[in-house]
Image (cartoon, rainbow, N blue to C red; front, top):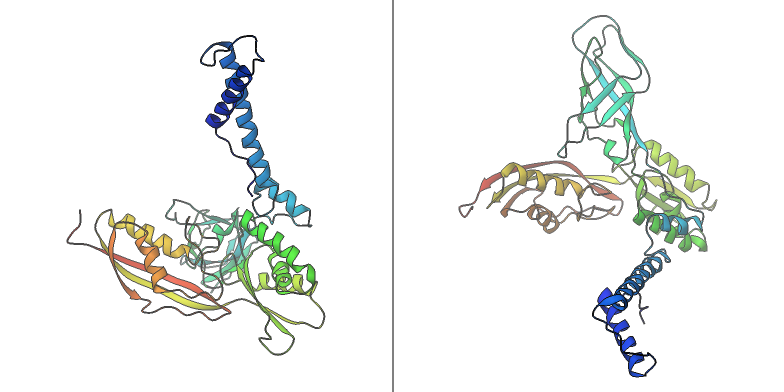
Length: 381
């Protein structure tokens, strides 16, 4: 049985008219009232609108009264009742190589120098600041310098080669570059409602002890963890449990894994042999030719590339695109669907991958790159 919390303004108005008519028929009013105009009609409209607002407020409060439907500050109140609070956003940190421009002698890279990315598809630029000074010694061509992103959030987890612009001039330095393994601390977005709601549910489900839900709850309490898979069917022998952790940048950094390990060790039973690890990367290179019937080739290819790339990001940065989870296969049907959703495409000639990409239980599909070309269909508009 549903709770009647919804009434339209017209429904409320008609109910009032019917009630007033019944009162008039009963002879309780000294004379018949005109409901079409005048003071009485104005009072009826004011009362009807007040009742309409009351129903809207009732629907809002009823939805926020339950954790499964609560949002925002209301959800924070539910989480606080079980000792949880929303995880804050964090900044990405790592190392960027400063490369000599051909000069000689020692080159000092001071703290506070700024490097950045090129604008992305949305025009967004990410700036990074050096957090310590380094000296490029005579005879060296490059030196690694620690940096931190000025902005909070997962957007600072820049792909390899993405940091390439030296914003603040450093005499003797001609280029900067972030290389494989550059990230030492993931940038994470502030915890959203879905993630907090899941942790709330896990808190109740973990009340029975060191269950699968409990291990997931302990791992998810660490900022930067966006997904965890608990392999508790003795993956390495009797009494073993493996926690496969995904960070906001995909494959987690050693620092994030260590934070999870410490959090789990503080809670787990002493006789459980627990291994905290990142997923096994399964590289995916996507190459395809798109046959277009309308649109601008550059725009269609850009939208298609962003939709495909969003499958490998958690959280996804494209509405409607769900990220691939730990242990989830990448099927050609799913890949074709995301490409076709860019619009204006009649046919896709997919060169890579040539078959469904199978991912083991502790694996994660990792995007190597997207290379798309376009051609016009004979039926193009």
